Image (tube, rainbow, N blue to C red):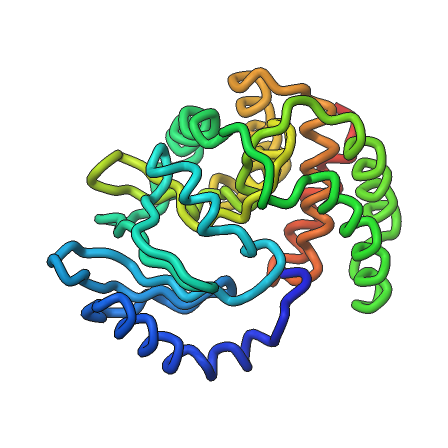
Length: 277
């Protein structure tokens, strides 16, 4: 996760105090926590009126800077509702039973995602960062991280990602709000709607960029053939430009590979995206 303001370990040491502060400020009754992830700490809570909810403490990092703003803009349309917010903390609607859409299996999960994505593509501007700005940041970040980590994959992958980022950033189409981490574990089953998006990492971008995290979402099927199937369905059914979508998927996959435990899988995805289609 690029651009963290403090280490995850240091932040975790602060979580009990941060949790106690927010519970008191928002008059919450804490329950069982969810598994702590790289992006934050999430706890089941009950609000003063008895409503079940979730308290999320966000690990401060670049991609999550406007998470609450994204939920506020979506206003529950295809995503969890924002109930309260503060600096790097929020109370959100609880998803029950809360199963990830990946549990449906590849094709059924793609049916859900194809229907959901257009609902999240709202016109947006400030305060969200633009994809053009993010791409410029990645162009500096990728070669530095590739060297720092001892050249973890072949140079051609990094070079191809950089070329895609440079060529696509200044030639985008209509700008909408997208979640650059909308993969198969970040859409959950719920009661208000069958499926709701969680954990937005918002950018203002053209629509072709939005499918990148799903293209590499190996929870929906591993291997070149499964990845290609996801790409083909998403671009065809959502009416997206295939070459632009492929370039963005390549660029973001490499940019997000370095801080990921799935670096080898991301590199494999990048290789498949570079093959002749």
